[in-house]
Length: 517
Image 1 (tube, rainbow, N blue to C red):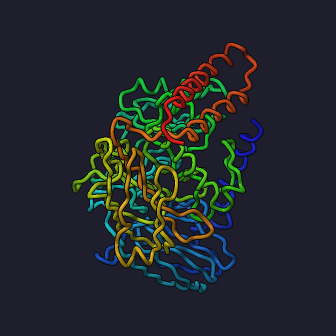
Image 2: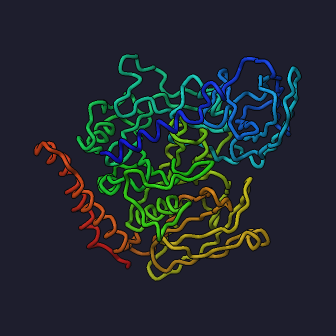
Image 3: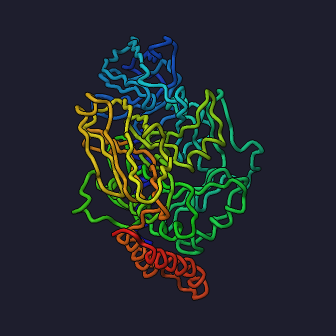
């Protein structure tokens, strides 16, 4: 309980620290000030484009503006602004999501004069034109700003969290008839996103007709699955397990209640990593050292999930508005095909894992002509041989590309080798299993990576790779969690523990089916 309170206080402090307040927001001209004329253009069309700007003064303090959507260390604009600034020297970085090059530079503002800055951003790749559409599942920003924010990030789907624990925007307001809003043809946001975040972790709710009333929930009561069961009565409701290391993840998995899971989550920041698991299951820091250890821990748990025969697609979320990320920094690309984005199909294909997550590298995977989520099938005794290929672009240097097979690094290909032959070679299976492709950028201060959703291989009658080690990992996890739960009321305690006991039975039964070490 105290860990949770301290963490929330820390979030609130961070949310206000760096907002700039009076010192770092300045939209009114003052003595000894000048103007910045900022123009940001698409290099191919020479037209202004919405973008995100990180503007800092000589002391490294961010400069934010009241008339623009501003947060922490950046603001977003439509690509053309005249901004009042105190005289002095400044540096800037301008971004528009990972599909565009970055702009950066420095300038000086002189009192009474205007300094003109013009930056052209070039497209590295147009993922949408290839049928890949971006989205993210953790946004805590204002609905009045969201259209500019997602245009500035070239992000196509962004549900907004409007009910979260004891806060519910709709408690005294009418739920809009149009819950999912589309604009400019291929941009969508959901006004009814929700989050239940308590001792067991955080579970995200999307595509809802109405919120689930979680406002009176206590830290442990009722069990998060109680609310998920209510939500699942609404057709199309989507539950995202926000992070793999939350304590109640093995329970949710046992009930089959996760539609996706946050492999790329809000502990990965643009500027740095959050180095703890908050009130989730802590990692061994010797095995998963800082600064990237938290990110590898999330992946380690996800691989255990897949090794337990549970097929769940990875998702991504940034938590902009609560933690230190821009909207869409962590994102998931889903292949739907076609020139226009179909909202329902995007979610359908996310569930199927025809997708990859990224906060940097952009990848176009093809394995024997197939996209992620594909199931390769063969008769017993046959060997499956797969040709693994990948197109890769991005703003950041890449050291190597990896193939992860059944939870372990099967092959590492240096970027130089990959660049010379354009492929990752052949991969063989003689038994059922899974694999994915992971690309890690060479950015030491944070964990910037891309990962495909899994591909699956089914050979003979045994369709799943079931690891004893992985299943036991979750069985022991459930036991540890049961020992933590502390509720004074015996009836309430029993209501919560019934979910965990049933989950324990699930993992015990699955352990008896294991077919691999």
